[in-house]
Amino acid sequence: MELHKIELVADWLKNAHHTVILTGAGMSTESGIPDFRSREGWWKKIDPMTVSTIEALENEYEMFHGFYSLRLEDLTTCQPHKGHKLLSEWEEQGFVSGIITQNVDGFHQEAGNQTVHELHGSLRSIFCSTCGHPADEEAFLNQKACSECQGHLRPDIVLFGEMLPQEVWGQAIRLIEESDLLIVIGSSLQVSPANELPFLTDGKKVIINNEATLLHDQFDLQLVGRAGDVLEVINKQMKGGELT
Ligand code: NAD
Image (cartoon, rainbow, N blue to C red; front, top):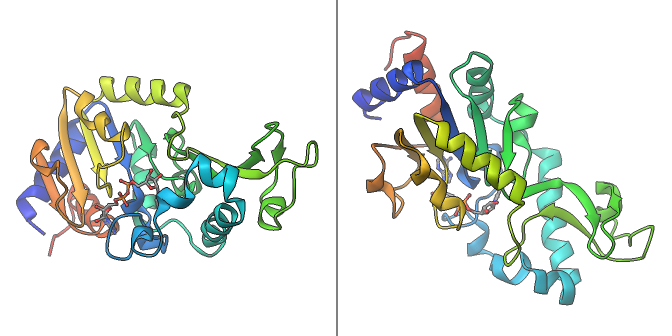
């Protein structure tokens, strides 16, 4: 890892008034949750466009249910990793104002972050796709129908072709417009409109990803590495530890 870049970002974090973190699926791969687009990602096994859509929910429920049951079951065996925990400590210590995430796993909240805007909803919340009545994870995993109207149950996530929750989107924009430092972690920045967010800040922009993305050169600083490892080194630098 390039140490001068670590020193710089640690310095920016210590001196910024309003740091916002934007995370993508790469933030959670070290917890054992696959992302979509990297070598081990879901897209190499199954095309999410065939399952993560309203069409699949309406016309191919077996397939839709199978995919999301697997993803929900992953959450019972995986936990937030050291990187999630550091982001939570940074919020508590006043270094981070809030997190905007494309992830649906709830790991930022589980790690202790208080201000988390979930752009794409949450796998952990289930409701009826017909009448909107809430249901529990157990009912979804057992492929039960809605207790009110017998409709299909679904997780409260944004499927391809659906609108982002407008209130959350507005909160995310406001948070970023106020920021003087924005750090993107683990996102290919290919999913719209979330990939527009980093460019709404007038502040500095940093990206931490394990490979270069197409938008890498539009950031003030790029750190290539695993999210948890990079955050750990930055934290050590911020706290005045010896870097190796
Ligand atoms: P993406 O799959 O398009 O990109 C992930 C990026 O993270 C890739 O560039 C990959 O190289 C990088 N990456 C993988 N592991 C990393 C690591 N340990 N450290 C640093 N970088 C790493 O993900 P996206 O941009 O978030 O968009 C995908 C969509 O999929 C989002 O809408 C999201 O809701 C959804 N998704 C969420 C989860 C989750 O909640 N954990 C998992 C899979 C997909």
